[in-house]
Length: 536
Image 1 (spheres, one colour):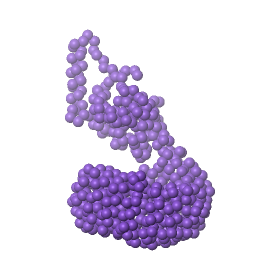
Image 2 (cartoon, rainbow, N blue to C red):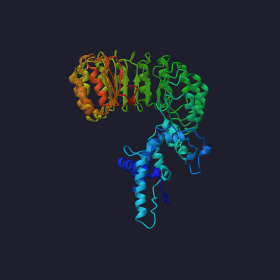
Image 3 (cartoon, one colour):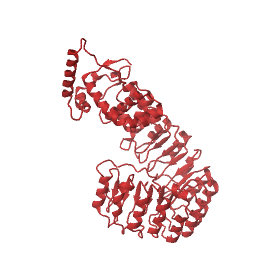
Image 4 (cartoon, rainbow, N blue to C red):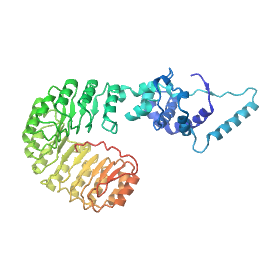
């Protein structure tokens, strides 16, 4: 690379860069050097520019047109408003040494060199600029930005950054949190212009997307594999027919809470290669709708009918007959489900996740059937008021070491016979749990919760609603033993002290804790997603 003379500002920036490089060598070694086999100089330059690019994400860029870009993709600096330069120039100053002091020191150094030499020394630079880095490295740096930052902070900088920000690798998935506060019409424009390779799309709670808007999306994105339209109350037969017309590769659809969906609506899904179907809380769907889906799709892996109280053992029977070789996840309401369904589901050798929201009609025989599901790693048995302590205790005692190690989620809310002895077995066998719900299990004491905290170090969420015999003294060990905990719910726990909870969230900035009144306690920052499975 040709050398160039360093300006005063670049001299100061170079000193700042040295600090950035020193702080990020380890980061670059792991993220860039390993993946791209870069030279040592290029690795260190990448670290420096990662810091500089992260600064950019906090700056609001002035509006400019594409015509203000040079051929090499760099911004024409004389077109930027003076106010913008003045506002952001302080970002390149050192913490304790002003620019003027640095400039004076440089002048003194240059004067001394001139006096001691027959020819003045001209400083040269072999520094690698960010735009000189391989595109692979730039893409790796930009991968640390959110999709909103790519749109609002990276793309407007210059033409080359604009094209990199649109790289299809960044736009294969759009999750509901990516553009949560963005108007639907603007989201549609982004999808239309940037998301030609999209295969995962979540439009949950987008009530304002019209029929025309859906058609634009589906016409533009015909490679979708997963589509989520949770609680989009405008979804009806027309929109379902539209999905079938355009999304020929769709294998997963989530229509939870779509109130216009009924039994007849489900006929519009015929023709799609669906492996996962969720129509939970579609209250106009009956047992007939469940039977229709079970009979007319092949190789179903996931089936979610939670919140539909009309579903009976007949649906489960049909589901097992047709799909027992492929079923991995089944979620049911349970209002009209009996022990017979559990006997049938125990024949599904690959069942990984099972949930019942109401287990009132189940006896301890259901627990015996669940024992046969050796590959379960997620289990929800809410409101199992007829389950006895001995049956629950025996279930966890009989669990194999491998199954216990792989168990991730457990929801036993309102299983009133759960005791500290059960928690002792859970903590020993299921020590890799990430989600645990023990709400309204009134027999649980402080000692039982202490066992969970001492052994389950991978927990992300812990629900303890209505446990009136716990004081929360063991919570003081959470920052050390469960540093990754993101959510703690102690609503209606009248003996847990709020001051203790407030101290806990100060110690753990990412934690969201709910106090007795169900109010969120956070430490001033954003509320982090717990990345939980909403079905549990």
